[in-house]
Image (cartoon, rainbow over all chains, first blue to last red; front, side, top):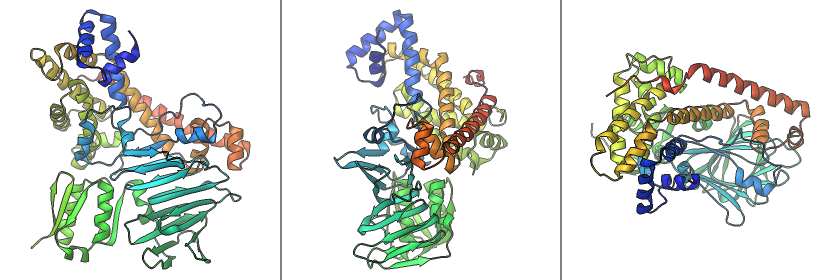
Length: 328
Length: 197
């Protein structure tokens, strides 16, 4: 019997009478029973929702690539955070050839590919010029069709950590919300430009780069260990030369950090990080600030700590959280 | 907290609740998915996952931390799933008796352990590559993922050919080292049948 057919049965793609006939046959066909066992185990184990990493890395050498081919083969390694209640996603019996890929959606609207990372997860991808980009939850990166090592431009909404391949002849450009352009040659930096944030924040670790505001003849040059914050409302920029780069890039290592962070920022970051919705009962909550460092704690643990240190209590229903001022 | 399996296993056996909780959250979803694949009953799969993880905690005193903790967990879950299927062979549920027999046979087949071991290996390789030094990783990905020759990589990165070859040498050495550790540490999945119910 055809292996593909057995696989169809395993995936649940056959009508129930066909299915029943198949399993009836198995009881009398030992070889088929064995074949089913083999394929069943292979299928279940290989579609377990672990982070898949870069799957075909050590497979046979692929033929010389052309730009178009490369777009369809870009690897994305997904880091799934530890949230037990997200299993409702997994239990649904979908066609699961890589159900983890459901969480990074990529489409080609004729002009390029969009890598969208849903809330609650992060992704990493490598561009054809071997620039590596980590994307934080709730972000998306648009890569145009004509992206080549001579023409490097992308659009980012959200937060990304960039490790840009050095090429002095061909700078790497990142367009961000509010038409603020980032221009680099070879650098490592963290760029936070969520559309619903108050500011855009760029933290430079290595190399050099320039920020160019729309309609601005002057460019802002940034050196390593410097940070630029641009207010989305006023488009005013502020350069900070004494910063701790580890704070800005903590998310990449799986750390959620708050240093005297105002509650509106805490709420937004937690929503993205855990993929939950937070409603705030009392606007006084926003007046508070929060300092903490989380590595792999669950939402409940984070919320408990919040309660201990700020008097903000919480109520959890599914993936919705309600914050209120505790009267203690 | 380091997530290396051998360290985590040691901590859990010592009774460290935090390590256990981390392990719990790493594995829970996967065990649910695993069990559900054979039982086609999500609620039951959830129960079995929780029971299996609880059993692992209860048995922490007798687990050998040198052995593979995940393998042990999967064995517990697998045995529970097998029991469920056996007791259901006389009643009709969401799946037919014939399918129950087929899945029972699959669970008891050697290929299950082999697939789990292969998965472990794949994950190790992926994480090793992710953790390669920055300078070296780019070359390695271009070579093995994008299928470029060393010469092409040297051109693309504006590097010397020997430089690229050096990158490849380093990455392969690191991979070899990790694989060796894997083969020593994970002694095979078939050796576990500690839990019987």
